[in-house]
Image: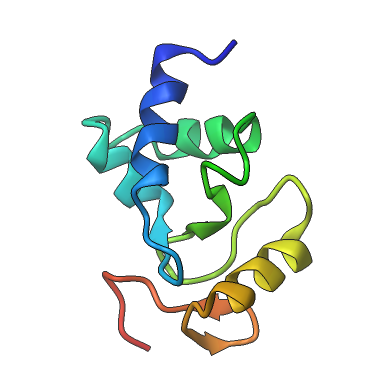
Length: 99
């Protein structure tokens, strides 16, 4: 059973449009917990609602992939399939970053 914190994380992530990515930091700020970036990552690692809650759309603030329960390769595959823009094979465009 997800905690209240985890539910807030999942609700914020569910709002990320297909083909776009956001950072773990962005999610933390959206839920009013800007210093809880690592906790956001931990919550997404336990995401019981995938793919309804698209945790693969959350990346590191430097544009690199970050973790994914099914492996980084699967995360890259899902992002490519959705048309997410990328700078290199493992670095994606984040709304806050220009390549």
